[in-house]
Length: 90
Image (tube, rainbow, N blue to C red; front, side, top):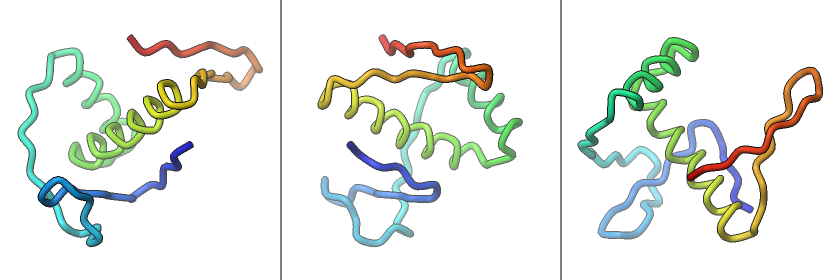
């Protein structure tokens, strides 16, 4: 399974990951109102920049997709009270 580290960045250069994590690639993205609301909510919660939140979200999504499609894993969220909820991404 993939691992995810806060601040880890991989950037594509000519289709291959760069060995220099400081190298940035500019991408224009069109967000739906729902996604924009979610972005604003996470920025308010974390006080991170929008760019950092979007980078983190893509990394998290990559780990989740790899676990689900590659390993057939399930994502389970466990609340403080011990109650569990299965996460389905459609």
